[in-house]
Length: 155
Image 1 (tube, rainbow, N blue to C red):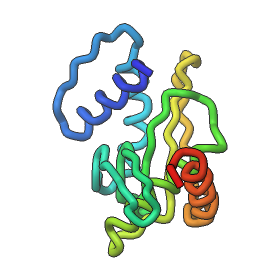
Image 2 (image 1 turned 180 degrees about the vertical axis):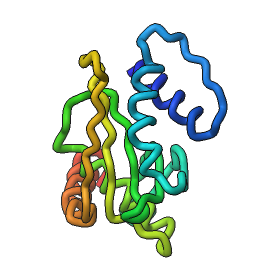
Image 3 (image 1 turned 120 degrees about the vertical axis):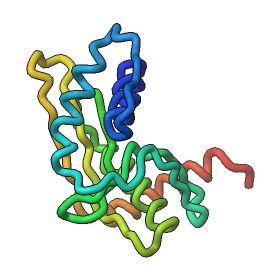
């Protein structure tokens, strides 16, 4: 978790063009450089960095790493310092998109990207997992929300 936190802080510093100091114990600078060097050329505009997103309708919230404008339109972006691709990634992006779309109905997001760096590789390979049509995951998000409510909220 500390590596991820440091990498996120460094990338935010790159975007804001402000230096960020991290202990350097984990080689976070190399991971952040690798991720940013792949993603930044694709971005036309950084719309929001670490936006807290909330859906009042569905009682969902979370913090996306970034909302970016790319050739394909507005996109939710999440940085990962794990080489593993997960079935939960598109669901996480769909939660962010659902909340963003409720908060910004004139700037809809339908796609997301997970940018992940392989920390174990000497080449620090970066993979971009693109998820189109995030709305196809909304039913899963809402089902998971219903299950969570059933097990966690007083009836």
